[in-house]
Image 1: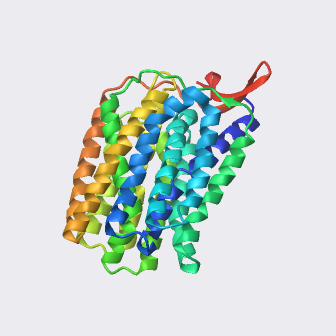
Image 2: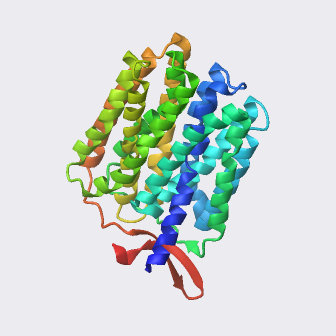
Image 3: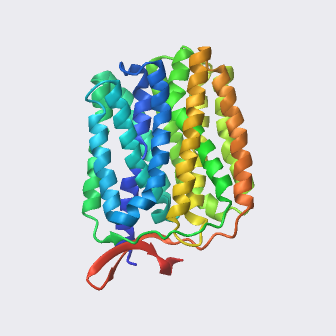
Length: 387
């Protein structure tokens, strides 16, 4: 494969990955200022994306087998554009429905991309950059205009991705349904617990800090800082995952920053909000680890494995996030929910140990997305010669 073709294929992954998180992080950043989101609605808004992403992950293999990979991604991108634009046009019902539809679209993209990227840092870095942008830009947009414009603007980013995708030559080679070589149940639980903590940070960090007396602008900036600290981790962790021999040690090391950040938010949230933001952001590396693991730990490109791990994992995370929100509503404080998060982090380490200790050696890494021609038709897939 030529260097130019590799650059184009990596750029496609990057542009698509950017759109996997702004729909969620922008909502979390604007949530305290959304007039149509009250206590119960706000709790559901944080948990709803996880359930929708889980359902969409389960449906992706079925959709892909019937309309093809390229059309599946096209439908997901069009759905993302329309739902992000539509969710800001009404009240709480439109916001809930639009968020659910946006996350269904994100689920399709999120299930496909780890397999197509094959461990490429372009995927995880794009994911982290999108998270950061949603958290950083949205509070400023809310202050200068309204929450509707601040959320609706992310439909533009999805539209750009859709246009880039439409101009990508060829067709993705459909990932094959293959049995994985890891303990899928442990990896699924591990992914679910990591996603619980990740989405709690994205959804509740500004609210925790504001309830502790931190000014709204500072609380929003702390969320942006947290997301930004995840960027270098998203870039570095895929390489660490491929090279590290003692992956149990890596699982534990990646969980430590989150434990520090959550403990700080529990004991003294207003004392060092910037430090807690840095710690929780650094802990985002756990998400990069599990996504890279999904893409590398199967003998073939297994869409089924990705669908199960992400589909069930996000459902688990949805119940975890809703439980924390319910505990906050019932107690009126963050102490009990944060204690639950610490317990979840311990479970994350345990499940990660089980997942990485019951596996076969990972296959050689393939380059992400090569453009090749077979007869008269262009195709895009993983480069077998790179393995």
